[in-house]
Length: 444
Image 1 (cartoon, rainbow, N blue to C red):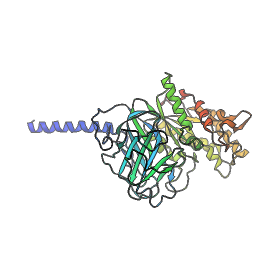
Image 2: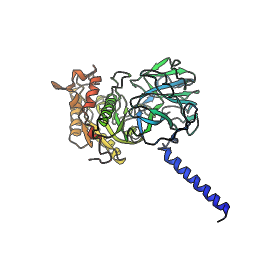
Image 3: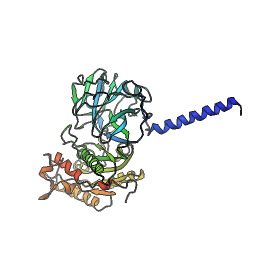
Image 4: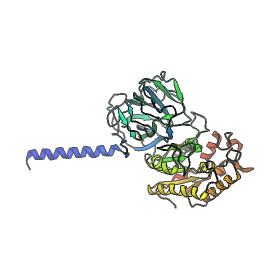
């Protein structure tokens, strides 16, 4: 071998090693072109950091399901405005990355400036000092997300505490058609005129909204959690009747219980919990439109569960809307059959599937004895053990002992269907945390 050939071989080996290391850090990729960047992207707010690269496990610290196109945005979208989403974390880390969605857009979404920061305090659009980070996508500050697509940012180095409010801001100068959003966020987010992506004061953010726009996931890298639990359901999981900004949905309370148990040394998994509930969601039927607004549990399970970062367990609380929104009498066998199909998909990916019974709704405007009979048959099938790997009995936890077809008064938000804050807390308290163990070893 000549010296020249030796140098060429050495250069090739170095390039190969570099490529392998880059691939290891790149993480999961999506079929529509979204990707994870290196361990830390282009530093914070345009500055490169010389601190050593951290290690750990990527988990989902927060997530939500894109549910449709925001009304009133079909022409301009959010062109010329900064969108500042506020999200609450269920895991800590030393690095973070986000996923943006243009699922319901009618044209490409061009984001020319995006940032991530810790909120200065609860309910604040201001950033905590020293936490503002500029986000990049494949190393660039601009990303073009095709209609129907999504994109994952490069990771940035930032200390994200457990139970923190995080600000994720995007600026798009051009129209993109309907804004992909999640209504009923039960969290105040913000918008401002012009490019204010790296504003730390919060003062330009005069528009308040209860929507999450474009943002569908926040992942963190760290040693706090070993995996992710996805809560998959309808408005009861979405927390539509919970106090806005208080993080009192039952998945929030479940995440808090897990953190407390781990700190107390109990034998439970170190998992984050993310909420993939959509108000009005059904197991079997899609909403209108193409792509469907509020897609069925069967049609969105891959997107909202299987493609979440490092998911280990899914908790499924679906079926009540299949009963309430059926113009006739729903078939309980079809509902439980749909739930079994969700479990089959979970098992194919090595996930444990925990299911819940359907909660009472006597007194609600949609209540009829025939619909109650369907709920009872679905619950009987779930309790019999032929649907899920494990069961949490939300029905038993919330029902009125003196009238088990209705919610106990203390747990009723007032519409006789959705729980109050106390009801959501009771649901999480009824959850045996050890049911989250043994992921990948399904019982059915």
